Image (cartoon, rainbow over all chains, first blue to last red; front, top):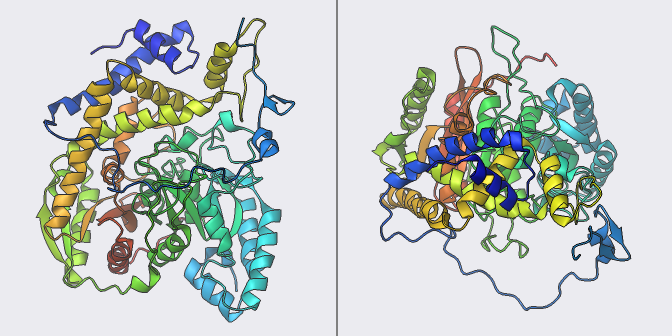
Length: 95
Length: 495
């Protein structure tokens, strides 16, 4: 499986990372090196093996579905690059 | 008392309780050592005022009697831990200026026990790296140098600043985190002790996430006793981390008897790799002999899927990272790119992430995106998770057969020069974690203990891997190894 520059561009788009056109060939090559390394996994017989979701078999704890630490609007907005009138502000989304 | 910054936690604790010194004096000694350590680039945000306040509070507590073991002990904190009101940016430009409104559970536990924070420590960006060269703060530098030249060496990574700071006596101990070897590899490169506990022992709440199913915090210390003391203070059940384990935390220090008679130590044949320096092999053999002399039974074991641990890791960790790092979008915190006229929200995301993330982080996020994308999810991600299950089963089988701990080298080499790996492909750098990454995939506790030096005078470590939740027994075996190895070398001060 070889990654070409079109695939590299598509992955960058999916990851929402801007990659300049002239950087795509090098990126594709790096992907190919890493994926070539990962290909070894195909040698392993995984027939009938369940994919691991948790290293420790445990039932996640349940709790009441209630607000535990609410009413922190100012704290939540304190690190925002742009916050106005109690909201996060972003560029226009709808034309 | 002179050179208070060189004390172990245990020695400082005893001196504090006897009234031979004060936390204020210990803290001042460390702050002064930090001031002269710019060349190491280990501390990246200093908090001297906070440290002195905490030290005074600790002294008051000590005076009142009944202070916990960590009371008054000055520590460095890896930049991955969110610390309230103190810069916490995971060595990334995307979190530049971020001031958490909350405290991570691990640092809160340490502060509740009276520990003092001297400042934040350098690391690889988002803990992705094995040499501390991906940091937005620049390289951290190893206080150790080769005996025959002055080349600046890596302290390892990702907890490189923590390792450098502890080895150079800038603090008594430091926090680290370990996703694929990020505590144990830097500990080995700098001649200190580092333990990654069982997954679920330390709360991940407030620790900037890299790969959530692998990340664990742990202490980096000057010896095994300190690791036991500090680990106990860091561990707790935490309702804020759904994978945190609700079981009691034992008194690990009380379990250090040094008696390993009758213990079974497994030597995995798959860890004997081609191209590993003879010195590492010799050290491994010496470690076996030391534990055998101490009365342990040494047995050869097989962990047949070892070879596939690194490739499985380099699917699972980037996959989880791509998901975790999706939150850095320029909206809620951290950096937002300057936008051009007409740019919409997609351009904002793309430019922000291109500017804020360094090269290695971008690469891993994109690899993760690829292995999780439609059409490849089964072939890569699910297959890697199945291989992970087999890797864990290898360990389960060994423990079921009566093995108490497994002895391996900690790293495939001693510390290498900063910049030496620049032209290597990324996979070459990933090989640093070949002995450590299996432990994260299986969720087991693992400890790196300094056990000798190579021909160039650089420290080498041995790794012990324990049964899940049996850190106390693992620390005791490490204690026996430490006593037998008698490693006491310190780097000559040049900085």
